[in-house]
View (tube, rainbow, N blue to C red):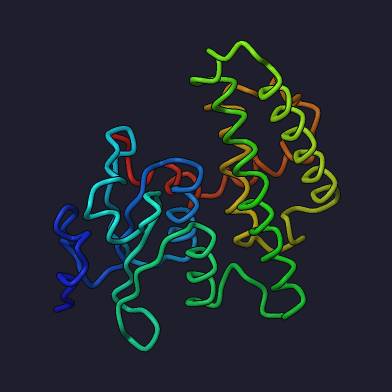
Length: 234
């Protein structure tokens, strides 16, 4: 039987099925990227809810897995060379899972790097910008009288949606005919922008038809419908 006791995170979130990949997450845009990918790939996994509302990412057991204190993170008991591997950062995890299985990432080197560039585009631009917009529009940023931060992030979010619109024009998925980790990285953030942050009107989301059609296709996938709710909210 696989022994994961050397990972301190298991003292707070015990592995009842240690032979399976262990996911420590919460259903945020970054968190569901990994659960959706796991569902798409059909990899056996055990999900643990790390409640960010209770600051559980800042507890010692979780920080032993990710010193940056952010979900998601994983422990794969069947990592490279058959040894357990702990990994954090959603983009890195998506790349790892794709390379581990040989799926959701093109084999052709040029197409592979083209896919990775859009994963990085999400990590460097879409996630941070949409997240800041959500803060200034829906959360504590509302208390700030100076509206320039909100205007800045709203404008930048519209610009990024324009980049996506141009990319998706005439394409079914970010990489054309093939659904990849680029789609999985990006679509939960676009969904959150309209649904959770309630910023669709602010950024003119309805004015991006290719983005909306693509988002609908992403959401219709069975793996998305399951993964978007893993782990369940408390």
